[in-house]
Amino acid sequence: MVSLSETERARIEATIAEIEQRTAAELVVAAIGKSDTYTEVKLSYALAAALGAGAMAHWGWPQVSVAWLLWLQLAAALGTLALTSVPVVLRRVVPKAVLQQAVERRAALAFFEHALFATRDRTGVLILLSELERRVVIMGDAGIHAKIHADGWRHHVDHIVEAIHAGRAGQGVCDTLRAIGETLSAEFPPRPDDVNELPNTVRQER
Image 1: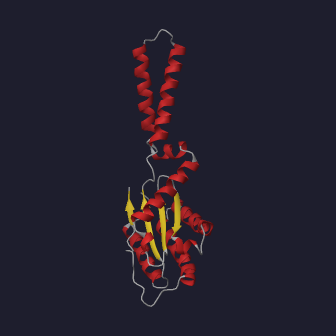
Image 2: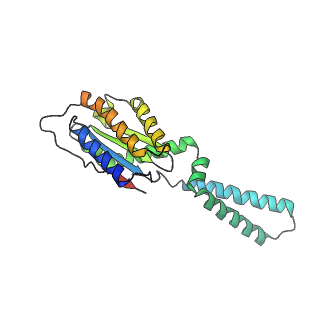
Image 3: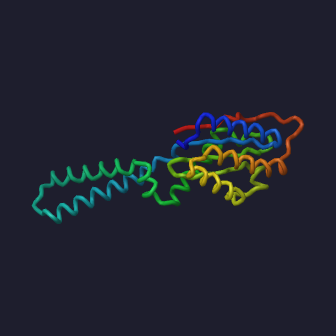
């Protein structure tokens, strides 16, 4: 998954706690290994490889037996499945739009899994980092979205992605949390009776 050491997780959690003292918003950071298995994509490449191998073998050796062709096709399919299961390969063969859609779907699911929709003023904010796709999604609940539309997160997303590529994922997340916190503290100041509605723990999963 996105490489966040215990020290980095502790820093992120401390940063969230610090920011939430100044705003009614609730911040959640989740780091996952992948947003989808992309099974259909891998099977499509495996089928194409099997058909291609069979066609080439039949064209090159017309006298080859059907049984041999079937074994060849099976080997081509299994080899392609193994190859496309390697993260760096899979990331290159899946269309970019499909990768982005998968991460956005996973972020929407995480939003519900971690109950960001359940805050009193609908002010939950999710930062999702997905390692396989090398993508980041920042998503705000209805109260946040009314003030900060999706385009307003673009700069923050780019900053985290650059930090991940530079091996500074934890620092990039903390920097972004503080930058977002400035906006949130101005737009959503804390109420006198504010409580911490969601845990500050960094969620990590494969």
